[in-house]
Image (tube, rainbow, N blue to C red; front, side, top):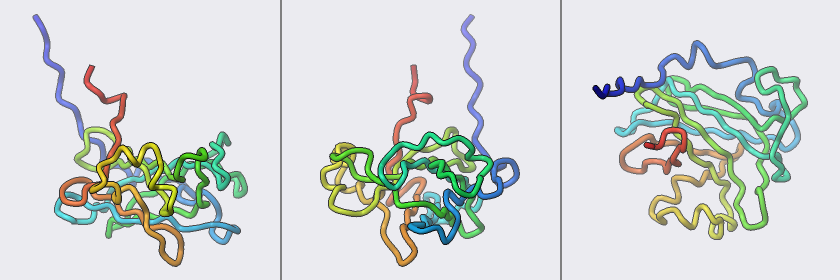
Length: 185
């Protein structure tokens, strides 16, 4: 007798209670030389803001070096760990205080790795937030993305830093990456 797997459970909506911690969204202290704000809004397929999502980011330092510092969950005020976590507010907005990441190689554009956890999702969603600039035209990953959807992976600049909006589905859906941990066998 062959048994059928049980249905998957959605993630959330427990993020605001269980996962935030002091300083989670501040990869560097506000006011640190070179600090920028990375912010955006998470929306669902109808364009409605998602007020209970959790965004996690990983990024290299300002020189493009992968960060291997420990202590992301207990910020010491001076070590840059390259990891941050921000829950969305009632208007679907998230915010990080961080450094502008450097590119991980000469042939690559600088980006921040982004994970989205939200109600109704069966698994986390992974994407990238690329910094605007000429390097995006030659980045090996971006050239493989449909040109009509590539802009969903590129942040826009504002007076405080970068804005990266995330659309979970529908028109303007952000390009999400396949997660090998959730691929069918």
